[in-house]
Image (cartoon, rainbow, N blue to C red):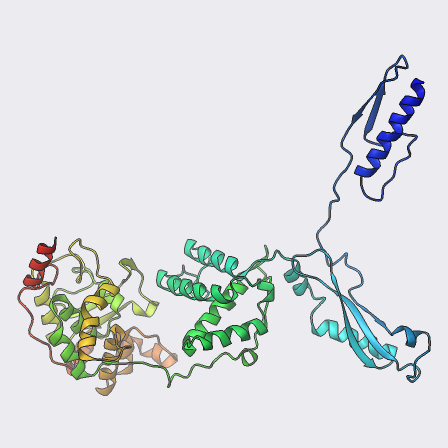
Length: 487
């Protein structure tokens, strides 16, 4: 009796184990399977206790490998009627078809593709299939790495790209230096716009067709040609930033700009608004306090607005204010290096503007030339809002005319007065273009000649009268009193 009961328990437990084990694996009911221990009473008791240990081990699936894949060369076949000789085609010229495997992003299983090869011989069909696979790069190592790499969306990769640049781990290609905050802000604005179009698209899918549709969307949004090109450069950089542990691109691309429809920038059609001499004089007449000094300095020297905000007394201005040493710039209230290496330069100031600057400073000997009450540099946004923006609206000037228009005015004035090209590049901070320019760099060391040229060319506009109330902050007295009342 006890023997039958024990046998029934053994059979039941064995059946239960087969159902829970690895699929396709069966164990004999007469013997205990591996990994299982059966204990019973030594005296032949009718009760049997089964102590079951885990036996269902999950399958360990290895990652894909080029060396282990099979069937990727494809094979040629014909339809069943042609194979059995029940067709009306010429002998040996039945329609041939080719089939091969294609890896799918994010999936382990491959997808079978079939293409038509035409009514050709078997040898010709095999050759056409090999050529097709090679031309489409279905079986190339680059395509294999791209498809089998983790699926990453444009939004995810773009955020990683921005974070790496901000941390200083991705630097500029030309100078191998950290990306400047102003450039990062431009990249961030581009990424924010692009995320709304291709943010959820995987990097593996961002190819020429997706880029073509993106350019169409940007044109529909009425973006300028320059903006379209800049945004597409961001797309290229984000896709190229996905690299392997060896630094090789996971998604190499051969961009077809003609197919994509990327616009070609026409320098002649770009808007480059500049102030005239009369407009500069009207702006200075309407400006108040330190803004009057700032606008006169921009128009008389060609300084960039950030370079003007970065000037410190006693460091970047000579005692008589006849020489300006550009060594730093300010962007959104933070001091940073100038725009380029050539922006580090010396600017010779005409005597009339030097006297104007010296009178505006008064007795100050330190601090920023243009600063707030707390001693911080001014910001471009506030000056445009409180100063130039109001004047521009009152004068009904073109919307694009802003701080850089002063720089273009200075460039035009230097050209009109035939200032030597070497001095123009020195004062404006432009780069040398050829060997002759580099040979003539010694002219920059002739300070006396530079001063003479600065006096000869002058400013090109009349300086206004300077208020006597411009002091530490460069604000008129009545404006200070208003601020105190508000406080």
